[in-house]
Amino acid sequence: MKCEKCHINQATVHMQQFINGNKTEIFLCKDCSLQHEMPISFDNIFNGMLESILSKQSESKKNISSGQKGVQCPSCKMTNEGFKSTVKLGCAECYKAFLPEVETILKNIQGSARHEGKFPRKSGASLLYKREVDKLRKMLASAVEHEDFEEAAALRDKIRAIEI
Image (cartoon, rainbow, N blue to C red):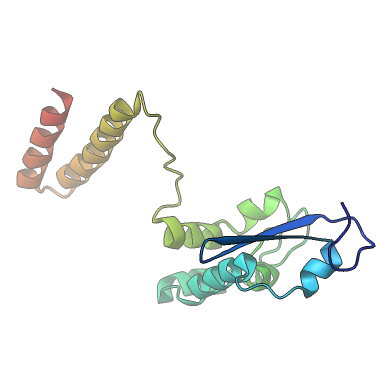
């Protein structure tokens, strides 16, 4: 299919727009799509969101990252400043090299640096209970470590109630 704007190049971009229930479609080549005025650019929204998260880091996290100004990826040679300006990793080794910054971004976006995932419909309830029990056991260990035995007893009772 040819580009609907220049009628020369092969169309590689398919854009749909819904306004008041009316659907309009346009097929463009890469060059014309870059020139086409789009009402919403998700790439710009996403990059802006990541940049704002990076700029709103707490002071302690800024101190950690400022101590890493000389960090450079051993594989692709991307620097810490390059990562912060593009907010994109250059290769698989960049993840290891810039781990504190990546974890900060993930924690700010999804609340945790660990992927929680979705639950299957059929066995999701058992996974949810297991995850809740694991969380309560970690809290129980922390309460015992801090010698907060009343909290530990309450957490123990919650765990037993869930396991029954």
